[in-house]
Length: 366
Ligand code: GDP
Image: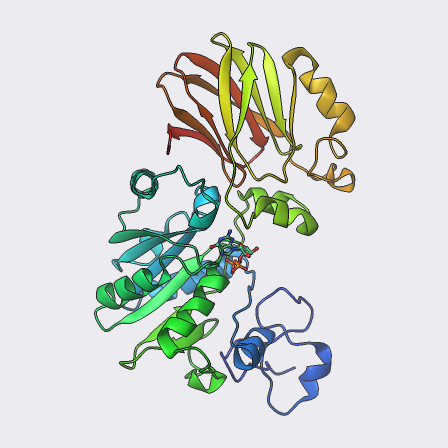
C-alpha cells in the first residue's frame, strides 16, 4: 500500500495507535484529503495535542534540528526536573542555543523564592551538561511569565526558527497554545495551510518575519513518576493548586509513605521535623520503621495508593537511596512527586522511589 501522508504536516498516517504520530481514525482514511488528528485539532480548535513517540523517532527529529540553525526552547516540569530532562540534548542539536523554561511555577508554595529556583535550575542543568542561554520560570496554564519567554525567544532567535522540545506532561501543549495566542493574537486561527509540507513531524506556527516556531512531539521519558501511575491517577501528581507544606514530627526509626509511590525512612539524628511538599491528594502515612515493609506488603494498592491494586504486578519496586544530611535546610527531592525539607543537619535518611525514578538532595528552596 502506498504511504498516505497528512496534508498538514506531511507525516505518514496510521490508524492503529490513537496516541501515536500521524493517527487518523480508520473511517477518515477514505477522504480525499487526509489530515492527521494532531493537525485536525490545531486547525479546528486552535489547540495542539500531545503525541508520543519512540525514542528513535524523537532522536531523528533532534538530529534534524542539529542540521539547521535555530533556537531550542526546552520545557521542563519543575516538579519533575530529572524525570522531564532530555539527556544529551546539546549534543543532538549541535551548536544551537538552548533556552531553558521551567513550567508549573504556580504550584510552588508562596514561600519559595523564584530566584532560588532559577539558580537551582542553572546548577542542575550545568551538572547535566547543559549551559542554557537563559532560564525562565513560567506557568503555561496560568499564563505566568509566558510573555517574558515570548520576548526572550524573539531576542535569542535572531530572526531564526524556534524549536520547542519537552517530555510528555511537562505542559508543552499548554505552552504552545499560549504562544499561538501571543504570536498570532487571540481569535486568529492557525490553519494547516501554513505548513510547507516538507517539515515532517512538527507543527509550524509562523512568526512575523517569515521564520517559524515548531512544536516537536513530546517524548515519553521512562524515568517519569507519571509514567508509572494509572492515567486516571495522573491528576493526583499534577496538582492545579499551590502545594501546602505538611509538617511531621518524627522520632528515629519512623517511616513516611507517600501513597504507595515513595517512602522515607528517618533513621538517625534525634527527634526532628520534616516538612513535606507533595500534592494534597497524595496521603502521607506514618509508621514505625520495623513495620514499614509489612505495611507495604499488606496495603500497597489500597491504603497506600497510587499505584492501584491491578497495577501492582507492573509497578517497579521501591528502590532505596541513602543520604546523610549534613547541611541545615536540605530538600530530599522525589522526582515527579515533590520534596521533603529536612531543617536540621546530621540526619540519616533512606528515601525510596520506584526503580528508575530519581531521588536527589538540594539546598532548600525556602
Ligand atoms: P504536554 O504533555 O507536555 O503537552 O503537557 P500538557 O500541556 O498536556 O499538560 C500536562 C499536564 O500538566 C496537564 O494536566 C496540564 O493541565 C498540566 N499543566 C500544564 N501547564 C501547567 C501549569 O503551568 N501549572 C500547572 N499546575 N499544571 C500545568
